[in-house]
Length: 432
Ligand code: NAD
Ligand code: UGA
Figure 1 (tube, rainbow, N blue to C red):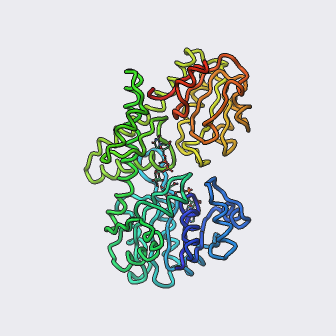
Figure 2: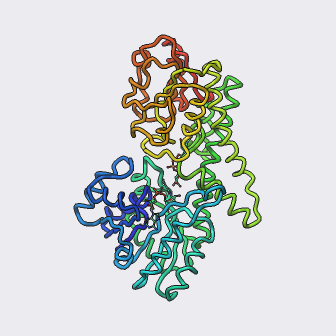
Figure 3: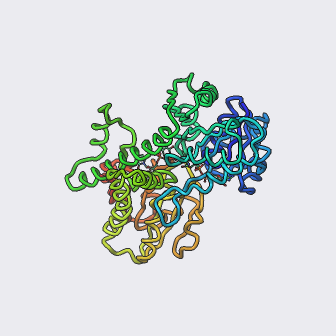
């Protein structure tokens, strides 16, 4: 099939290259000229395991191309995926749909034959209706169909998630358009993914309902972890035991820092706004949002407590600053709250992240990036394991700190509490 991806970010690039790898002809468009230039030089603008190899392979075979020329891309394609960002609109909780509507306007300008226009971006219920009427003002109604096909991949696991999803959701008010998508996804469906066909609004809501549920699960276990800390119960036992109940499920029950990323925070906020437009109070989601905001503070205050409220001139090391491992994405990472707060209190921060230095901290004095774990931990007072990268799982802390009295706050429960105690290391973790 001839496919165009508008927006070549985490979703557009990953799904575009996976479609190409399935044998389709894909054109990835982006208005960011730098991004397109990089891709045409075989450089990948984001950190995502396995992506470079897959892009190179399909670029060399000619199945994927990168361009800023949206007119050419739209005209040459039958299926057009909108994969642009839908961040939170400044000073509100709503999704900012300006990129989506601008892409839809561009598509409308260049339609030359029948197109199926697919929103892969996460968009509030009724956005598909709006895209449809926007294009219908400029083009004959029989020249296009607007379909919703939300994406469920996770950063860091994006290729695997795309190729082996639990389900593919397509929302369309037109059977033919839905069938076209089913045909496109056939290689994935034949490997076991369920194909869910619903109406367009249903598909839009499914995406938000899924993300909000996962966010709820995380906040729930984080609050139970707080109770564990007060009652001498191990959260790991609780997660395992309740997760074995198939009605609950074992995944997304890892207690840790506040959930972050480019999706859960913005999507939970946007869902409450959509609901209120339809006079519905999503009180559970509202409390999840509150709980997650509180979590950032709770763990930060715990850092102060661990250092006996004497933060001034203490060296604090962050191992990992991204919101999760295997990504370079800093969006809504809890480290963005913690580090500036600790700096204000007089701490000296050293951080190491496998994806390198972060511009988010470049304006902060007393924050430095170390390009090795050893350097970041050298003579430190407190090590904070913020992100659970593989390379943080078997460290010999005594050797690398070269200091007698240092402490560890393991926010991801990577280490055994007993082992740490045996080694004589002052060790704190979550919910244990
Ligand atoms: P991103 O910011 O990484 O990429 C969006 C890209 O779109 C940018 O490169 C931007 O330059 C480009 N763009 C914006 N307007 C454009 C236009 N008019 N024409 C051409 N290019 C344009 O965003 P992302 O993380 O890929 O997310 C995209 C959407 O997918 C969002 O709605 C998000 O909620 C959803 N989503 C993201 C993930 C994820 O893991 N990141 C997973 C599932 C769903
Ligand atoms: C999430 C969803 O998992 C994807 O299905 C969805 O497509 C995507 O959002 C989206 O809509 O963009 P992502 O944000 O990439 O994916 O990463 P997750 O693995 O879901 O992690 C999100 C946050 O939750 C991270 O901060 C992570 O540390 C935290 N988390 C996750 C926990 O604290 N505990 C867990 O058990 C799981």
